Amino acid sequence: MSAQVGWPLRGGAPYRGRMRLAHRVRTSASPAQVWELLGNPLRWPEFDLSLRRVRGSHGAAATGQHLLALHRVLSLRIPVDVVEAVPEKRLVLLLHSAPGLRETVTTEVTPAVRGGSDITVSVVVDGLWARPAAVPMWLASGLTARVLAARTDRASRKATRGAA
Image (cartoon, rainbow, N blue to C red; front, side):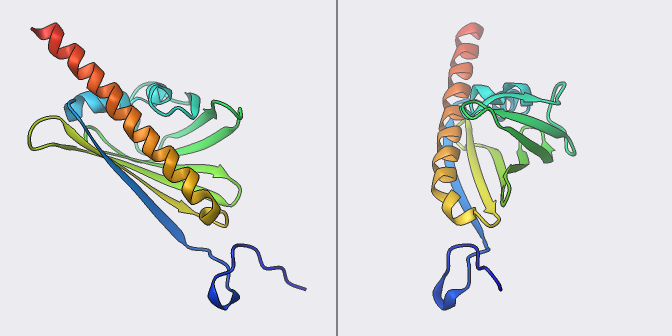
């Protein structure tokens, strides 16, 4: 006896692929100012509203770190692996969100031509539950990107006022 798990596609085969979702936002903050927030795991709850706190970090994000994020509402512990951390440029995280669901979150920061930075947040959802999780993940990553841009914008304006 065999059970078929997943959402069937044409031909009756379940979906077991990956889904990539992306958002791009602009901020007036420099890549260094964005990295002050993005590169410190203890500060991630300041822009990722689903997180209460992150444990296992003492300073800047580093490739190979294994962290534990605590979900703000559900009090779930989410294992997070830092796959790649390139200061002021790129942060790649692997989140083990739930059994049958993994997210690879890539945040890229590039200098904008007219000053400030472009922030691209892309999420690759993988696993048995990738398809039903796609829309909530897309909405959450979009909110996170926008809050990150808003918080870094505010910090940039504060720094500009302080220097004047």
